[in-house]
Image (cartoon, rainbow, N blue to C red; front, top):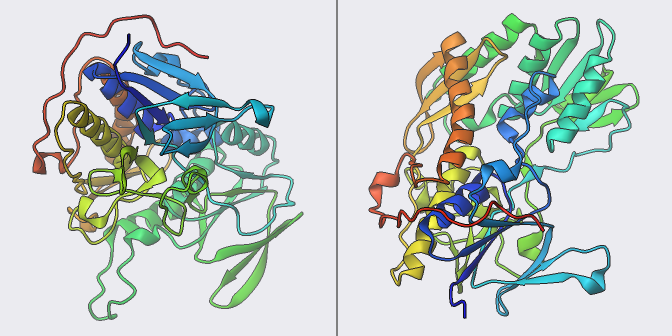
Length: 420
């Protein structure tokens, strides 16, 4: 009789894959990973896909330990009391139920709903590889001088605008939104105490060199000939042949539909060990979970939605489950800020050195050196996920602040990852 626990992980993004491989390597339980697609959405490369630069795919069977059982499907409800996971089906009355002893919600995030409808023929959103590739085809077919608008000037929008202009110099590209608003000085600070942020200056300079126009406003309406941009209580129409949304992220409704505690954005509320209060067998990690501010740097704000926090959270959940299975109490998570990297085309990049609280220090790596740093991190993400199949080698800034119990280095056995 098999008395081993079953750990169910919902979502095969950065957090879910790392958690699954780390748990499989520890060999303390049977690991089942549920995902609605067969490959990893390598989100930090989607702006390259949208510009036609990047086509590589990462099938999950090549990313996962052979000890991980991969189930193709979409989780629609977690029954934390009965410890079952309901998966979708073409016929609702035949929905499948998967039993578990512990469950990890790592369902990630998607693009936030656009603030308005998009009748523009070329309007797209960077949701996954397929949507990014579809936008690349739209852009490739545009005539010389056609105008492309990128709505949203956070990291994703900035990277996409730069990539598009470098790849398609014949096109006009306009970036709309507050440029890297998370790096701006606090709005509560007086003008006398606010300091210039070198990272913003460097980003603006790079856009100017590339020829990208930046409008610090917001797209409030889209029609079949362009969009309406609002700034300083003024509105103006911008003609465009294509528009792409990069206006932030939202999370799936799984946690809310399951009756689990969520914040106003629908993110699963977890404690500093990444467990759900009142349900010690339910864990959350990555963008789908909101950890308390005590987990991040100086404790002023919760860990941000990003690959840089998803992977530490996934690794920490795996370590916490290993400890729990062995009869030890899970330990709190700590993530310190280190660096935020931005791609500004293939030949330019921007690496912003951050303090523990993820505030910019003013030190930068720019130009080609910045591009090298960014590229090395993008490649390192995939390498770290794969290496976890063989050893728990992934480390993150702040991990040293908690002494984690070592994982059992059991040699993986069994067949390759199975898909059902």
